[in-house]
Image (cartoon, rainbow, N blue to C red; front, side, top):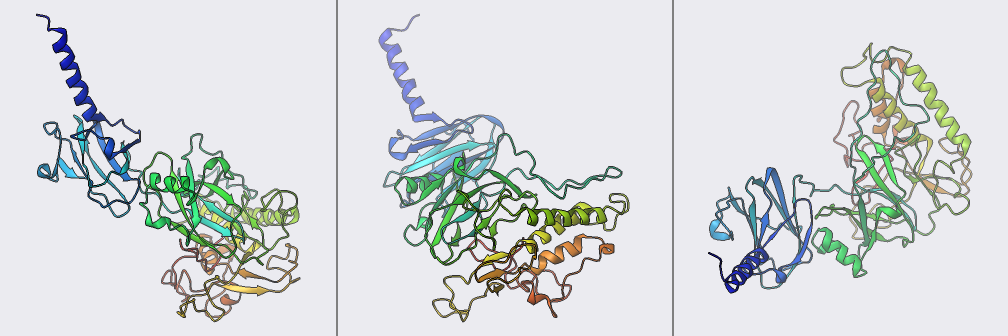
Amino acid sequence: MLLPLSLLGVIQSFLSLVDAQQSQLVLERVLDISTSALSNPPTLRIPANPNPLFVTVALCARTDNSTRFFLTNDTSISNPGPDDVDSVNTVELVISSIGAGWQSNLFTDGGVLSVVKGSTPVEVQMLVSVTNATVVDHPLLGDTTSNQALVFSPPFDPVPLSQPTFPNYTLPSANLSQPSPPSTPSNFSLILAPTSSNNLTSLPRTACALRAAARANRANIIPPSVSQGLWLRDPDGWRWQWLVNGLIPKTNYTVFALWDGQLISSEPAYFVTKSATFNCPLAHSLPFCPTVAYAVPLVAPRGIATAHTADTIPSDVTDTLVAVMANFTTTLTSQACGRDEYSPLVTCADCQQAYRRWLCSVSFPRCGEIPVTVNPGGSDTQGAQVLLPALQTVKSGTTPRNPVLPAFGSDYQTLLPCLETCNAADRACPSFLQFKCPLPKFTAASSYGVGFIDSGEEGVMGEGLTGVAQDTYGNVWCNSG
């Protein structure tokens, strides 16, 4: 029997209302929505999937925290709420202090995400994904000048150190070149603002909140399209690198990294620009020294370039470094690498990599200066004693540590290499090379930063004053290369 057209219209309207009340979240697609736009009851369907799914909710602004979210994979529950929570099939998706929350579960037959609206509407983003990529590492600071900063994204797509095998044991060329970057790299953007005037850390640590701050001119958003491209510093993986210009001298900045498609930003990193009299230019993108990304005592590059790259470094500096690296590699491979093992822990490839890092750190001295928040006596603006970096004053015209470098035309301070960079090469290389580092209790402190990463006691690894060469607050104590 055919139903009357009027009744068919009522049924269709009812089904449309149900569909509106339970919008479908699409796998790997971000949903932007305001809680005020949700119907009553406000529920969203989770797609069925045989694999565990991660459901993430991110707030786009600070709220009174009265909005709550509940998640279930029990298909008999159409509108999960506080009374349905059993901590197994039905849970509350709690929004943490960073302004986001996520939960993983199996949704073999699908599920439901419900929203208990708070007293005030809030913009949110939601994402259902098969991977939990919500935790993003800090951005990495290369270095600053008075008006520039060299900043790297968190790493992605790790590239393990290649371990050749005997008898075809071939190490990377002394004049190292960058491998081909990934064809579909993870895209990162930076959110950057002066720390004091734009307190971004008061916002939720979510992509939508930080992008809203950029739209309101509280911060600058720096996309990968204006970067210096992808760079492989080390086996940790590829990074986007940005040379940011137009900064203010002696100013603290806060920077976040946003990973496209993810709802949560990185934790913030901080840095401070140098004083207006700082005159060492930045150097970066040196394939033969991939970890060099800091200010060096060289005359600024000619033309429109605002920092040194492999194209502007003096050729005699490059040629000498590559020749030393080539001679070292020849000597290293004079033994049967890969057949005659000298250690169960490290290989000739590890040795070459560690030696390259040390050689680059001493071949390219790093310029530095006392942090602007520190008084000459070693105390901060509140009078508390602080740990000073391993700085050494170099007078104008003095021959640099690397005698191939031309003498710099003005006084500057050099940040000494970390002793641990030398010790790492010593530990990784076979004894017949007779590579030795100065001893901490004798002469090491005259040419290296001592006691920051390691304690400085003979044979003791770790237990240093800082444990690292630099931190995420912009402090750099020694040059790790």
